[in-house]
View 1: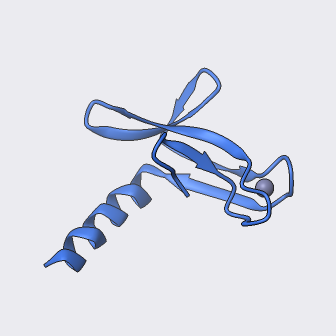
View 2 (view 1 turned 180 degrees about the vertical axis):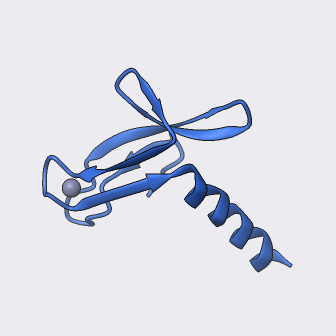
Length: 71
Ligand SMILES: [Zn+2]
């Protein structure tokens, strides 16, 4: 859901509208939406209505799973 430019897009393959940016600060990842850095974001895509869920904990979990898969 994130490309090389840290753009977070809608999960709907037919939509893919930019919904936020991923920002790294203080060793953690945050979702930048407007003037806010969010630890969690829950909502729906304004273009297509697809649910959107993101949280710092999910990112940490993904990193952990990534490490486990590399072993
Ligand atoms: Zn969408």
